[in-house]
Image (cartoon, rainbow, N blue to C red; front, side, top):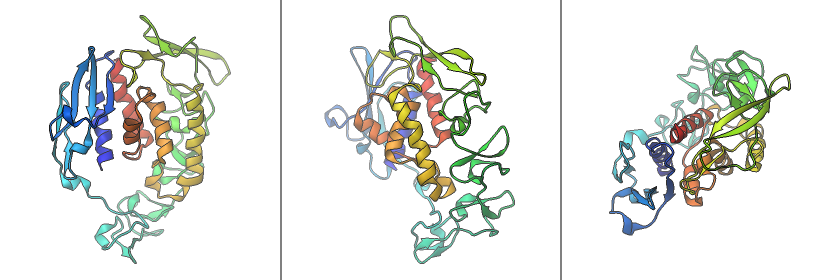
Length: 330
């Protein structure tokens, strides 16, 4: 739970940074800097804003108050314990029926609903099933079957908005038309202006110098024609007041990201519950975080580790995270 609060702290911090003022964000165990319940220490060093976060200051019944309205220190406050109560999916350990989404605890394990049994949502169904609009559990659908959401489809497929049929992740070639936020269907996990593309950096270096505010990229459309685009230079959490080009497909770390995620869905996620399809392993979370949020590229291992281990990072959640990060440069 502390990990989840760490990620929430991270999001709130980012949302109140002044544009083009690149901060340093890091873990801190320096108790001499803060009082007993101060979990965020804000200060400036050589005119650079620093945010030092120490969630160890908060007890299990507390959260770090990160509802920032200004650049300031924050302290631990009592949490609403009702927010922490979760139920078990199919095969999760349990002691009573009320511990399970299906309301069935059998032999110390939650038992999900089988095909044609009543359900309120997919969490109540067995692994391999989903809950239909008619509130019945049914077997997850495969490629080209009609769907209404990703949960309806097998875990390495999603519900493609353009066709409303189950479509394999990473299956669409460059130039394919998509709806914003659906890069999970693009073969190279990148979208631009609602198209799948594979952009290549067209600069001598990936650092922005002087009055440079944007970076140039090139890519090919569906007809193999070369086009160009520009992306805003961005901050880096450990290199204050320096700007960089966003990570892109010709970056070595990015080249490792796509096959890692594809392997996750094809070899591991397919065996899990439909609502757990995006619960990446730790090493994949780190790769995804670095790609989606270039500010984290050189983040200290403590900060990056706590953020990556905080919670599952779904495609939609990462899109929100990336949107918040864009406020650095708005």
